[in-house]
Image (tube, rainbow, N blue to C red):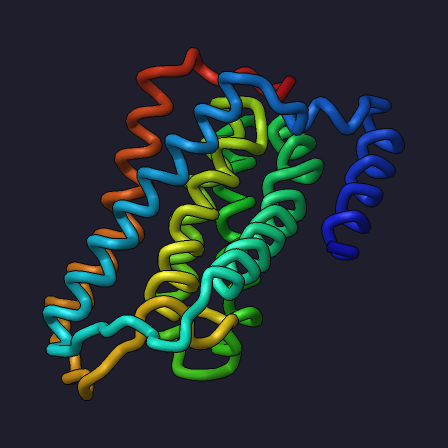
Length: 233
């Protein structure tokens, strides 16, 4: 929570020092449209995550079983932890910095640069920096494409609600439902020994995460929303 407050403060200072605009230009004030965007994004990526982990279980020849010791309090605390982490990352990567980038270099260049930075950031958060170059490239592409999706959603909707919903939907299902994340064992526990993936199976899941989901979101936002101007308001 302290990280979120510090990020809010730094965002406010950055906006005041550069363009002399209030923090609300980031689209943080809730309204009906923004709440719908958050829920729609969350639901879409939750479905994508369920498909992803279900297919992975099939190809890995593993299964999942309910955690017998899991309680509602753990789900609530885990969900809150994920939400805080997502909000922090959205403020950091799709907040004031992206707002200014869009303003000065345009939507497409700003979103591409934001996605690249987001991908590089995950080298360190996933602790893969300096490891196998193929793994680093894979992480950069997968998370970078996700970063594009979040950045483009921010640029088109002109608020942080849509990218936060998209981000939270994936992370929530991955970490809280399938226990694949930094908060340990959660609702479902993996059982069985995973078999090694073939190159084609790896390509399948790369396509789902890096091409299909970001592609659908980009297409939908481009169709629904008017062309984004160089200024987010």
